[in-house]
Image (cartoon, rainbow, N blue to C red; front, side, top):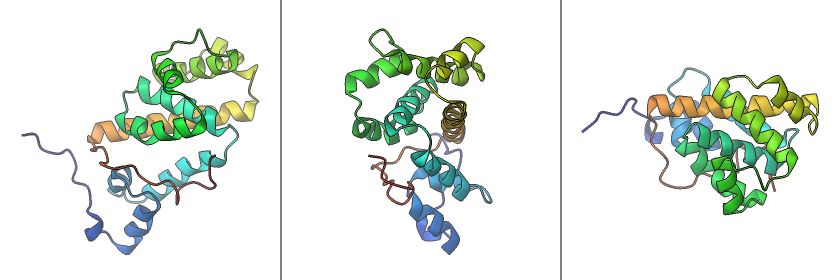
Length: 182
C-alpha cells in the first residue's frame, strides 16, 4: 500500500477563511491549494478570470483539452470535458484535438493547437507557430492564450507532483466563473 504524498485538509477541519475559499470551488484541487499559505484563492481567481477573457468559451475549451492531453492531466480532462461538450465540441472533435489530428480542422483551430502544443511541450512557441496564430488572433488574445496554457500546465504539474486524487463527483463552477460561459 502506497502512502499519499500529501494529506488534504478535510472541510470539517478548515478555518473559516479556508472554508470561504473552498466554497468557491469545492474540489480536491482547492483542498490541495489550501496547503499553501496564500495562493489558493488567487489561483482560483486566475482560473475564473479566463471565463471573461478575450477568447471564446469554445476556443478556451479547445486549448484546455489539448494541454490536458499533452500533460496527461486526468484532472483537467475530468473538469473540462463537460465544459468542452457544453461549448459545442463533439466527442469526435475532442478526440481529434487530443490526438493532434488536424486534417479536418479549420486553419484558425490548427494554428491555436500547434501554438499551444509547442508552448506546452517546448515551453516556447516557435516564430512560425506564433505568426501563424497572429493571422487569426490579436496580440492581446495571443497573450491570453499563452497565459491560459501556462495556467493549465502549472495546475497539471501541481496536481501530478503532489499526486492529488481525482474528485469522485463533478465540481460546480457556479461560484468560480465571473459569468456563465455559455
